[in-house]
Length: 357
Image (cartoon, rainbow, N blue to C red; front, side, top):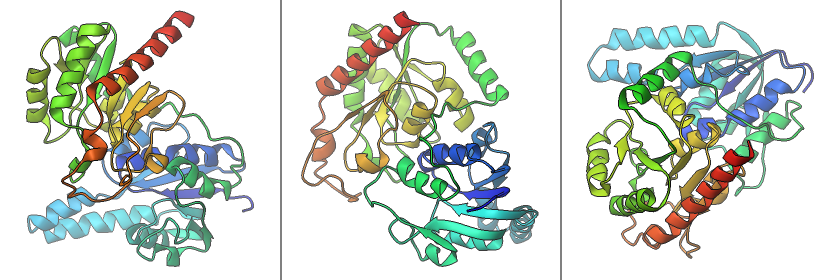
């Protein structure tokens, strides 16, 4: 591809998938002669993307507000939101559009935007016929990590170097919220963030709450760490229940959006949790991460980087996509002792790094 000047990147959701696209986008920005990069995304992760120096512009698809207007019968409001979005999407001419998402919606947006060339995945990774919208199709090994997979598209734009390291920057207003929280709650000392939750519809990926309670209790008895429970919308009551079960000095974080959660994670020392967007956020916030994997494919979705530890069992039925599985052997066979050992190892490494500074 010769002399691309303006580039539109499309990766709409989810949090983890957006974050695993960030290294490829940074690589594109670093590969001359890219002049500017716009990113089409939906949801609250847009605030975080807008604070990364290698992303020049963030275009938001206002899916939530449009759906809310439609559900409440405000048809004109929904149409106004759609019209405003289309106007923003089409207000620039792009030399290249790169669709990292690969679904019919992202393919449609790549056609709707004003671009000379559209690059996307072939049928290996793209779905719903989205590949029909692309001028250039790119394929690769099916069971490859999503960070490496996304780099396949970046390389079409001359990003032939190593995969860039990412440490996310947070908006000052988000950092201020977390600073006030730490001050008000008088939080000090080494902290481990514990995230027992998964996105809605993904509870089949969750280690049992009582296991997390036993893990937190042991961490706080045997390691120099204070546990803070990470929770999101609709999870507060379960988080309170976990706090009660774990006992001791266990704490809960304040309500946060994505940018504020990133600011929180950049202030703590260690993270443990399952396969969630929060896990990837912790990785790219620069935290040592212990990730618990059951049914999902760790080769594709595992935490990226060398400061990570995956705890999983090699069972014949994993990976799988059976959300209604009643057996759960892949997760229930993970013991508190095994997870605690991984946390202990990562904390020792953390302490060695602190001493070496």
